[in-house]
Length: 219
Figure (cartoon, rainbow, N blue to C red):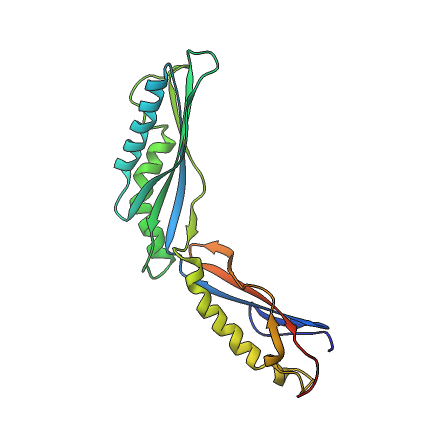
């Protein structure tokens, strides 16, 4: 079989070589949630004080969030000390913002500002801080980049597989070998959905499938 490749539309490519065929299909879907990571680092003069301050900071962040948000603890590094007089502890949090059902980027942006604005403003003011901090008594907050996500990545697989089936059904017409049939193909990959790019405007999903010819004989 001759090496071939062709495209029928943007981001949809089919190619085949001597014995294998590959198919790449993509689709853009609205993001369903946005995640903001927040790290709280506390230095205090005892284990108990450090652990207590970490929990107080978490509670204060929760009080600054608006509706449509969920605050979860992702990781925790218990207070530890090298000299017995200064303890350091860290808690890693994540704020999830529900974007499900919002029609466009402007609506998603408005919700993010509405529910995260107060918390981000306080973080950049080095809050929550209620007292004078010293080298042995301090709290620091920082946040990472906002990232959009989908609730169930593989739930979008049927749409992508339907596009693959539609494209494979037309390959015989595009091939210069009339005896070649899609029914002769055997799928070699599991075809799991992957994320190609993430934007507030949409998450681009991709499905890569690789096939092998069961037989090259004409039937």
